[in-house]
Image 1 (tube, rainbow, N blue to C red):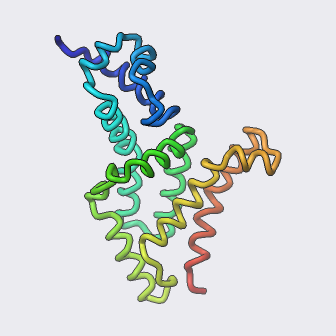
Image 2 (image 1 turned 180 degrees about the vertical axis):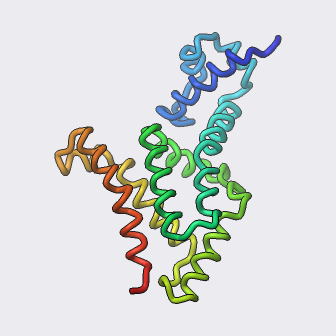
Image 3 (image 1 turned 135 degrees about the vertical axis):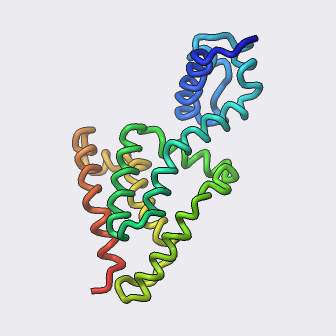
Length: 199
């Protein structure tokens, strides 16, 4: 049977929607086939198992999201500019794909092996070197790349994971929440750099 690129594209798009909304464990091949407009036998012809299809979709999502971030972190930009660009890229990517944070969080927790070797460019090592250099020059407090990145990622990611709670506690509608997120593009870089900069 000859593969049809259009059919395969429909399968991937359907699988992406189902996996993001249901997760790997909750997704059903029949649901993916229905959404792609094909029968289940055709789906199994293209992808022999749900696991293989999931790995394909998960890798494509990571490949669309991670390389730009690693490019920023491994660049020759100043630390302050890296933080600004990272936050802007991260927030824009999540606003465009609102189910992405919960999907990545759940699937990376359940399948941490998917992330092994994701930083082949050595971007995090470059960032660690930059942080140590800045600290040795007396510009910032000494902080490791893991500590720095966890602070940066958590401040950027948490509001999306906790969106229903935040909107409920602070009586926000969707427009107010969107404005809140937009403000964080400026607030987070300022907060991160003020926290580590030696006065």
